[in-house]
Image 1 (spheres, rainbow, N blue to C red):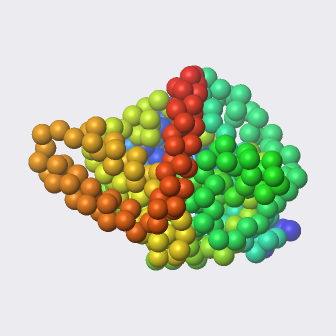
Image 2: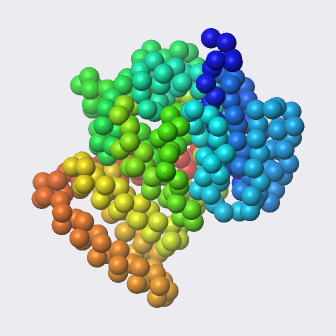
Length: 343
């Protein structure tokens, strides 16, 4: 297939104060085996050397587009990228992560060959000390996948198979549950552009990806899973995921859990993951409460919403959600210890 008839793929990268890692990320994108790319770097008001780095790459490679805007958060940056994208397919990357050289090639082939709405692959976590080794390995490129698994009802999969231990059991019994696992993160995915028509990330909140996850998965008929690692996720101790502990952070996650919980009830899908998100975030709200009366009023309102939603679950379904949450909490404890030891 010649380049001029290859579809354009737009890769959106929100950029904020990532000068230490940004070149690794951009180099991994521009070094893709699939070359018909539009790389949209959205400088979200960075105060370090990141804007200059972005402009340097745009001057060297015509595929790079740079958007400079005032700081507004990752959702605003992602939305700016979506509004500017021209590709028939959309991908996202975080500004400190590294894509495997065959990422877009394999994801696009899986999507096109199966007629899926979204394709996804596996990912791995790595520490800062591994940057050069991971970048070198990613530049070589992964072997071809041995299997592409296609499944329907991604909303149900999103809610059902998020526990690692249960996925392993499912695989043991030949149910390909690992292929059905995906979270709300937007990286290591390739989307048909039309999935984003009318959907944008809510700006000004932390859990922007969780808020739109249910809507996106409900729109999809089929998802294709590629059983190779195509994305390398840097575990940075300074990231919001690992450091933010404010009441607002927990409330935003609670609100996102509620949104998907309600959607699942409407679609007759058992909201196991959203139960886990909602219950955990509400519990964390309790620990983050202080003398702020606005927070107290919000907490009381959230408690009312929580009880109203839980009352709509049957006793058996509430028990199933509770058991799944306990399993996931144990896994998270083990996961957090592992991540904190990454250097």
